[in-house]
Image 1 (spheres, rainbow, N blue to C red):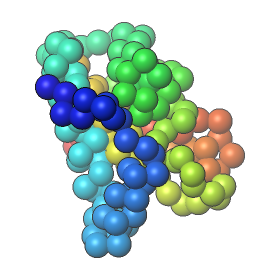
Image 2: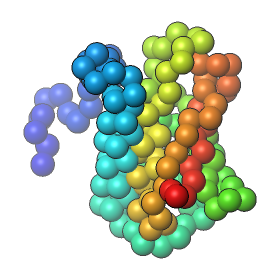
Image 3: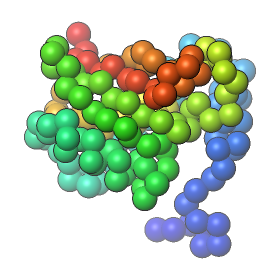
Image 4: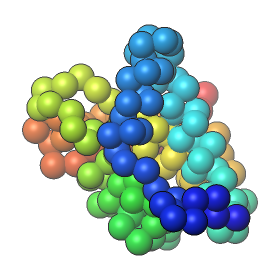
Length: 155
């Protein structure tokens, strides 16, 4: 059901970032980061479940195509997925650009990509049926061309 018949489903990045700053003011950076990863994870799970991407192990190419379609310019516009690669340890390295989390951040900022990474984790969890954790290992704020998320099995 569409609740905003005039404005549609999307809000500005400025509004989203204001919500993040408000959470950080109340919960602190670590508390807000945990909350945003969990919220993103739930969003990713809901998205993957609603698209019937459940209970089967998918290869990296299939996951990349799903993430590109659903999170990119023809989907929710959360980010652009550049690549998804399987790691030797059974996890995934996901490269993204234009993530909502990094928008407007100054070069050199220590901000990490929490909500976007959480959404990617949630999608992959539903697709593979495995509990996963993620770490933002490279960032566009530190002269990388992409934001890289290392997603691995939860211990």
